[in-house]
Amino acid sequence: MSSSSEEQKDTQLECIVLGVKPGVSPSPRPPVRIFLGTQPEQYRAERVFFWSIEQVRDPSRVYEIYLMKRMPGYQRTWLWNTGFTNYRFAIPYYAGYQGRAIYNDVDQTYHADPAELFDTDMGDHAVLAVSRTDTSVMLMDCERMAKFWNLEKAASQRKYPLIAAVQAEEGAYGLFDESWNGRQFEAIDELYASDFVADSAVVIGRHGGRLVGRTGRLAWRRRSAVAQVLVLALAVVGIAALVKRSRTDHDDTV
Image (tube, rainbow, N blue to C red; front, side, top):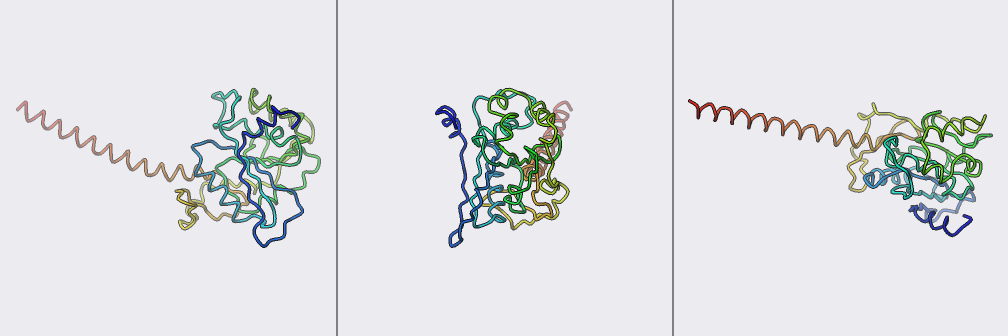
């Protein structure tokens, strides 16, 4: 970073470090940097995300996971799909416009080593993403992305114009193997109830994709099922109360 004010802003990102495991010779490769878009309500999904990496990571390598949540200075609008929608576009800034960085939404789990994605040959691309409209998983060359995305643009501009600005330059925006974001909503039956993380109510499934999306949504669906039962029970109690009151009113009139 070039100034003390920038360094001060950089410290706003909490960093979770997964170091080299005991008894393992350190890898000469650079740390795998992951920037995680999240928000306070997703603390369980965060634990699941960390846990999933711990299961598949290279024990000789360092993994740095930066939590992007409650970031000050952003002009949040109803156009944000989540509480962290535009944070991803400031990653080149927070990375010091140097090296590579992965971006992930918090409601995802890794089923293959994220280092494989981090080390992917990017060719002439400045950023690789799931599709031309889906940036829930990205690998970016932070130095090359400096001319497209920075803190000021991320804080004030809309998501799709920011994406379009990269795509306007031929070859800057590329796509990676779609298995890095397997949205397998239908695979709930394959989830294993034994794979609980800490005291989290989120269940992790073993799927074929290297990165399975929407852990948070699976957890939400499970909670929603309980909520639906409670709502139904309250409705039954309410109807029963109305019937009883109606009968009481009828008896009083007779």
